[in-house]
Image: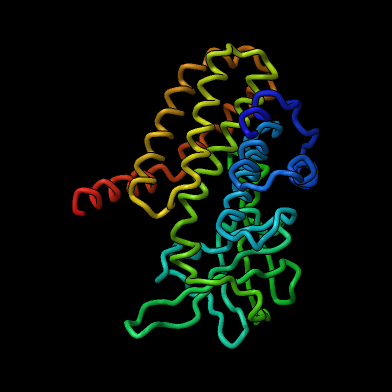
Length: 301
């Protein structure tokens, strides 16, 4: 069903210049689509720019990690702090139902309706930080967002510092499971898969609208099918990281081969792509490190 829709549904992009106008149209367009990866890929199909395709993939990734989120609200993951997002760098505290701390570089911070906040609930017997994730509405008393500077690419995606000052959190707002093992650790891989799927959908939409060669659409469709299959694998498994690395490399080579096709695209779309394609290489070093660690793990076991 996904592949047929990808190749036959109307690829006309949503008429939206801002995230606020894009999001409700995106939700309505995907009302009957349940699987997160399908929402990512089809969401990208009708996004008119990389930034909106990213939002489709990012939100789908969060849904894949936490199905209880539902599909309608714009949600952000608030994890990174001054020292990064490793468990030992998380100093935001959730003690006795009260949340205190500060987050940096929260994607969609200040624009999302609610946030998945990663917080420490104390230390275990070995002195290691124990993490939980809480779903906190953005308008809850004690929550404050301070916009960070606009990036030189995908400016439609805002980032913010988020401050939590004695914010009330109820037990039923805590997501089940360990905050690191169940959410923070797998998120980057899940995000890579879903955002990559959305970008492939975005490129297929452009290709169909502007009559790119059929061979190009066929190649991108096969890559979309591959990324969809990978979304059902364990995001923590070394084999998943290795396959994802290969898929991203294949997409990079495909993009090089289709460079001449951009002459068929209107100037506004082409200019946005040239500005925003750097998103594909963001966090590349971290992905390479996960791939190298995956190969090492396979050889050791």
